[in-house]
Image: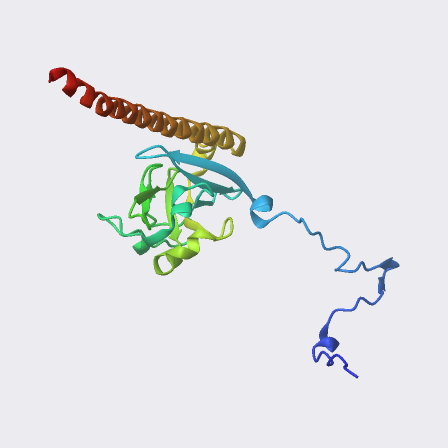
Length: 231
């Protein structure tokens, strides 16, 4: 008769035992577990977005913490995530962001960034390069060098974990910075409009190509007839 082997880890599994402290029953940790508990990003950050328009629209996410710290990330809709990421570097030509150093609580010594300063350069599998902007006027605290060694991981990194850099804006600039960025709702609306316009342009190009082909076919069909008349 077949019997299931005993689980050697069984003695270590959690089994709730009723316990009362000061007349109050201690609740079970398993019963208190919430399946859809908000993520770290949902609990501690506010999502903002910045869309770099040139050479083609590329969206970036700014996770704004209440203590002013901002995580700069690729937005989930960034074209590079779909195309595949081949390489990633913080060496932007005139400087290497990975050499940034800061000291103390005030993060002294960090590189000063404008909203359009380049943090890193990402190259896709199609050899298309994207200059990742800092998105906010701030001071560079640190960069995530993990993507230099393993750029492909950035394609599947969880929200927040896929940050490119951590930056710190000045306290007096925070409200203006937030107003300059897109909220989640504003971003959803604008990105949908961008995709719609892109689809319309693609359709127009396709229709134009079909028209050219039809004209060319018509000219080819009329050529023998014209030749007969010439004879």
